Image (cartoon, rainbow, N blue to C red; front, top):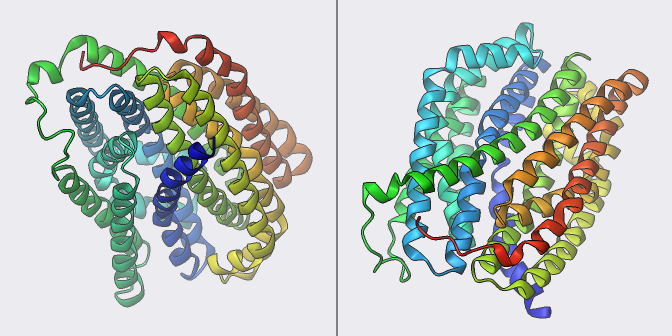
Amino acid sequence: MATWYRRIFVLAIPLILSNLTQPLLSTVDTILSGHLPGASALGGVAVAGIFFNAIFWSFGFLRMGVTGLVAQAHGARDHHALRLHLLRGLLSAVTIGLVLVVLKQPLIHLSLGLLGATGAVLQNADAYCQIRIWSAPAALANYAILGFLLGRQRARTALALQAAINVVNVAVALLLVLKLHWGVAGIATATLTAEWVGCAVGLLLLRIPSSSLENAAPIRWRELLDAPSLRRLFALNRDIFLRTLGLVAAYAWFTRTGARQGETILAANALLMNLHMIASYGLDGFANATEALVGEAIGAKRQSDFHKILRASTLSAFAVAALISLTYLILGPWLVSLFTNQETVRLLALHYLPWAVALPVVAVWGFQLDGVFIGATRARELRDSMLLSFAGFWLMAVLFQRWMGNHGLWCAFLGFMILRGGNLALRLPRIEKNFAEQLPVSSK
C-alpha cells in the first residue's frame, strides 16, 4: 500500500504545481485590477473572469474526456488509440473555439447581463471580454493537450507547459499595465498572449518523439472520423458538458447574487473566490492523478489496483485539504491584503473569510470522486449527480440569502460542495459492480 502512496504523490505533486499555475491567470488579473483606481475595475475583471471560467469550463470535457480515454488506452497499451483520442480532442477544441469567436458579440452581451454587471463594472468587463475572447481556440486546444499529458501521466511536461503560460502572462501584464498604463485592456491582452504562446509550446511538446508512439501506424482520416468512435466521444462529452454546465451555473448564480448586493460585496466575494479557486486547482492535482491511475487500472483490468488507488489518493488529498484550510486560517488576512489595497473591500473580505477557510476540507471529497468517475469514463453519473447538486444549491441560495444575506450565499455554496461529494459517493458502488465490464479502449 505504501507503494501507491508514493506513486500518488510522485504523480500528484507536479500536477498540483501545474494546476496551481492555472488560476494565476485570473489571480494576476485580480491583483492588478485591484490596484487600479476605484472598485469598478476589480469588479469588471472579476465578472469577466467568471464569464471566461463559465465558457471555458463548459468545454472542460475537452480535457476530462481526453484524459479518461487516453488513460484507459495507456493502461491497455493501445498506442494507436492514444493518438486518435488526442487528434479528435484537438479537432473538437479548434472547431468550438472558432464558433465562440464568431458568436462573441451576442455571447458577451447576454452573459454580462445575466451576471448582473452594470455601469462602470459592465464597461470594464466588456472591454476585457472583447479582447480575451480571441484566445478561445488556443485556450480550448490547451485543454486537449493537457488531457493527453495527464492521461499518459506526463505530469512534469504538464507543469512545464502551465508554467510557460503563466510566465508569459505575468511578464506581458506587468509591461502593459504598470509600464504602458493600458489598464483593463492590458490585463486582457496579457492573458490572450499567454494562451496562444502556451498553445504553440504545447503543440511543440507533443511533437517530441515518444518511445511508445514513434513506431505507431500513421493516422488516416477514415479512422479519425470513424462514426462509432465519434458517437462514443460525443456521448461522453455531452454528459461531461452537462455536468460542467451545472457546476458553472452554480458559480454564475453565486456571482450574480453577490453583484446584486453591490460593487463592494461583489469585489470581496471575488477575492475569497480566488482563494477557493487556488485551493481547488491544488486539490485537483490529486483528482488528476486519480483520473490517470484509475483509467490505467481499468484499461489493464486490475481491480485490486483500483481499490488501492481510491484509498491512497483520497486520504492524501484530505491531508492536503486540511493543510490548505489551516494556511488560510493563519495567513488569510495577509492574502486578502495582497489582493487589494482598498480598505472597504478588504474589511468585507475578512468578515466572510471563515467560509473560505472551511471550503477546502468540505470540497475535497467531490473533487476526488470527480477524478474517479472521469478516469472510469462514467460521465452519466457525473452529469446526474451534478445537476441534482445544483438544484439543491439553487434552493439553498434563494432561501439562505434572504435570511442571512451574503453569509447565507456562502453557506449555500458550502452546502453545494457537500452535495457534490455525497451524490457521487452514493454512485461509487456502480463502478465496483461493473468494473469487470470495462474494456480496454481501442481505436474503434
